[in-house]
Length: 62
Image (tube, rainbow, N blue to C red; front, side):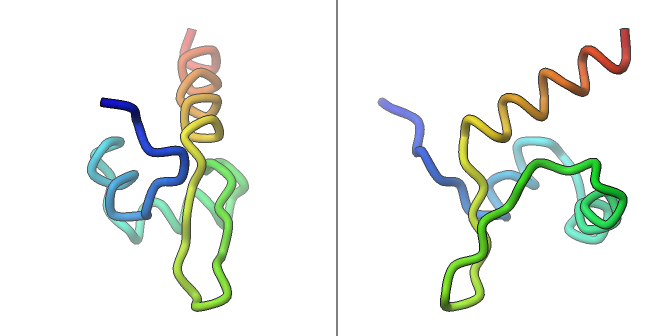
């Protein structure tokens, strides 16, 4: 089964095991994956952006 290209915020939060508040704090500091806001106000994060963010977290921890 192929992974979805655009993920909803609850899916991302579950995958990274983070609360919504913590995610938005990281976003305010410029440390979260890039989000895309839809016209209806919902937020999506691309799988590629999330994977790149995970990779950068690994590099920063090393």
